[in-house]
Length: 150
Image 1: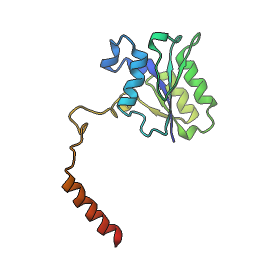
Image 2 (image 1 turned 45 degrees about the vertical axis):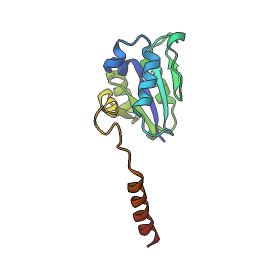
Image 3 (image 1 turned 180 degrees about the vertical axis):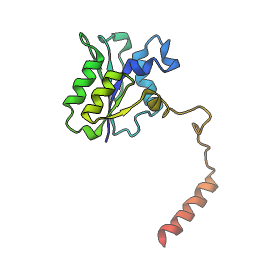
Image 4 (image 1 turned 90 degrees about the vertical axis):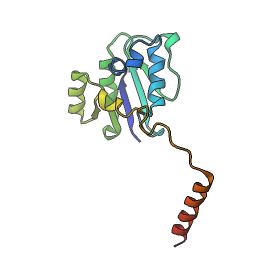
């Protein structure tokens, strides 16, 4: 299991669909989920936003959402990372230089925003699988059964 700690606005500003969103906070959580950017559903995800919660933009879903309130999101991300016991599970997503430098000191895995976003499903690139015919499914099953029985 991995634990993702995401610098939300650092990522949002690099996603064209989210830059002009009326509700970027909730759209961002949906974008991560829709594009399976954090891999397995067993991975934990914490999204850190600057400022205070905005009720109309409150993300929902399986993610932990944190707001920095009176401090910066950078400070909150650094604190969460420093407090996390198993650093080998932690993955921080940001391009912020100060956060990156701090994570290197902590020996926490860093993922750049571009690398994180490049995991997104690309339209036209295997985003839709071709459905197999029933006869082909049966043929595959028969072949697999013969292999299994050996």
